[in-house]
Amino acid sequence: MRKSVLVSGSNGQLGRALQEASRFFPDLKIDFLDRNQLDLSQIGTKGKKIAWPKELLDTHYDYYIHAAAYTAVDQAEKDVKLCFQVNALAVKHLAEYLSTKNTKFIYISSDYVYHSLQNTPFTEKDLPQPKGVYARSKLAGEEAVKQTIADYLIFRTSWVYGEHGKNFVKTMDRLGKERDEINVVFDQIGSPTWVYDLAKMLLIIIDNGKAKETIGIFNYSNEGICSWYDFALSVMQFRGYSTKIFPVRTTAFPLPAPRPAFSVMDKSHFKETFGLDIPHWRESLHKCLNSLRD
Ligand SMILES: NC(=O)c1ccc[n+]([C@@H]2O[C@H](COP(=O)([O-])OP(=O)(O)OC[C@H]3O[C@@H](n4cnc5c(N)ncnc54)[C@H](OP(=O)(O)O)[C@@H]3O)[C@@H](O)[C@H]2O)c1
Image (tube, rainbow, N blue to C red; front, side):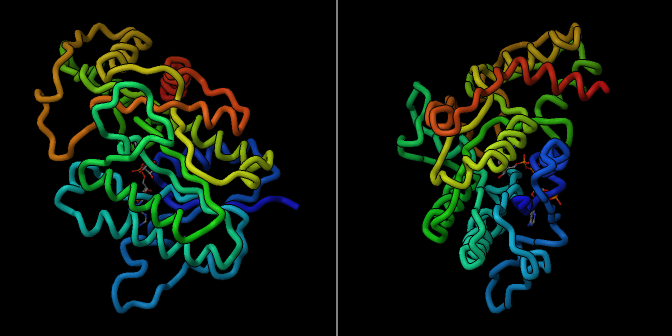
């Protein structure tokens, strides 16, 4: 029997990538929900009965991929209540409901939960120390999942970009055409993740049965590390733009939300558990830029 999957946040970067990747998985039956069908800002708010979308009421899904989230990191510093409502409280209600339906909950979290002075790659055993509202809300979402539903997977990912939505790669691609010079921070180190790699990985582990037999938290990004400066430089080089990039410190771009200076994640646990290779970020960047050109 085909495995069934429900995905929220269908218009986000991950939601769109899952839609694109889904055509290569004929044995999966995948349905998608957008914000109008599942509004997380309303789920479980005081005094209101939860109006679950009919997909959740009428159909049994084997897997639920929670790709929706409040992701406006800087705005979150002001929108504390809404950010926690969407990223944690609604998640708790969803997890509660899906635990009664025997559906596996796949939650997408963030490298921002790792924010300390550590300068070696973080493993899942390192103590999360999120700073800032968005980061704390993502960890609260993880806690809600762990405490509420026994059958779950959590993937912490970082520096996500793709062909759709707003992201660093698309911004650099545009600035490469428009500007002779730009400043980019060099003192934040992490690992980019092409959202299509993340989407494909999720569907592979569902399709091959590994997701069914596994529970827990996993780091997942592309292989390799870089600064935002290096990342920007690679976009310019792949594209052949002559834009000059100046490396600047984070303090040159004061922003409301704190960013970790080092958020490189160790992905050994993922690779050992799921037996999958992960592409290097440069290789994936190249593929994404090529598909942006098409
Ligand atoms: N982007 C990154 O660099 C990054 C890094 C680490 C982890 N992550 C995590 O990865 C996951 C996917 O991120 P992404 O980059 O795909 O995010 P995204 O492009 O910002 O998409 C988020 C999706 O959530 C939906 N959404 C927002 N508020 C909602 C609400 N109140 N009710 C229902 N849906 C709502 C949005 O709907 P609309 O389309 O209608 O706006 C959008 O479809 C998220 O959990 C995020 O926290 C992202």
